[in-house]
Image (cartoon, helix red, strand yellow):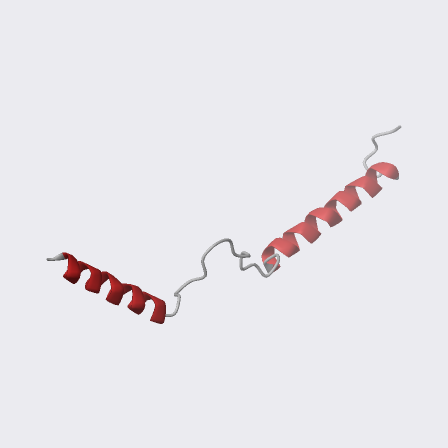
Length: 67
């Protein structure tokens, strides 16, 4: 391949690359998240309610801790 052929090939491929639409965005992107999944949200609510119930139970001596 001569230098002229190489230059012509490089020029054609560069032009083709410019015409082609970009497949993916380059650089940093925001992650595609929609928040908590329903199961995770249910578990979080359940844990919070259990902690509140235990705190209330200890506070009102449901468990006989403070005699």
